Image (cartoon, rainbow, N blue to C red; front, side, top):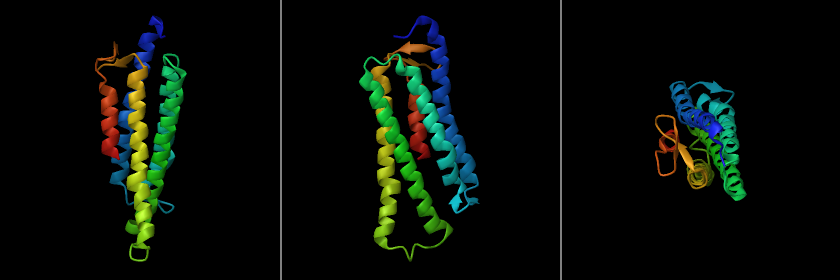
Length: 182
């Protein structure tokens, strides 16, 4: 269980990580959407930044959160499940972004829509909008469920650690921000 001396440091770390997970994706989406006609190789800057900046960012911050809570998890299966759902989230993110890059290249950058077989386009759409999002949200909300079930405290609006049943505001804002940006 968490020692009293580490409580303020954990509260600051948790607040920082959740704030980063909330704000960085929104900032990246806004900045890249303004410049979405810019291409890097044959990929829109939106998809390029999503693949080479945002995906590693998610990996690093999710790992830091995992390390932050590893000592406090009541059962080792919570840690295993958190890693599995974190991987599922990242896998879905990569699938979505890759399929989205193929879709935008073939429909927006070059007008290949008329020459792409309809079943191929349907498959691209499925990987982008259906399966990719399903994996992202399954991983995301499962991670939040594990956090609520396995960690006996959360960070309130004032940055203090509180026992469960209290304010989970940053986590709610993070989930909503990811829903908005995807």
